[in-house]
Amino acid sequence: MALEFERIGTQTYQQPMGMLAQSFVLRASDEPGREPWVLDPPFQRGSVWTPDQKVAWIETLLRGLGIPAIIVNRFPDEHPVYGFREVVIDGQQRLRATAEFMQSHFRVRGELWSEQSKTFQRGFVMSQSVCAVVYCAFKTDRECAELYLKLLQAGTSHTEAELKKAQDYLRGVS
Image (cartoon, rainbow, N blue to C red; front, side, top):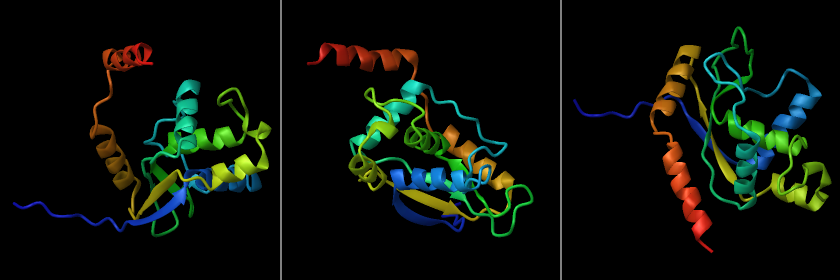
């Protein structure tokens, strides 16, 4: 049997990561508890990044490097739990870390967001770190969870030895 493409009703938009996080922060502050996206559906893990991982993520954004897509589901009808909010299937750690930085929850290179100039803040929000946001149109939570699992199973985590190898290399390079 030949492989076939399976359309899941996706649409893709490009948006600066800082703008996504700013939208999340501003909308959440306008309506506490009514964030635009559901970051913690039952199949998702919670906030698990360490402070060092969050800093490393922001430093990646500051360098303007390409970043992985955020995958979100838009249910075609009102969801009994989420209403009309969209569910983040992949990318919640990146969204959380960016939003937390913009709320001055942690320092990057020794400085808080609130200590930055308006020029820096505007530049970060509109940065060249553009993210693809892929919107799916699954009808059920089950379909969202199945995609989440497929994404998790698609890679191999680095071992401690592999991380140490790269760290040791860095220590030896000028």
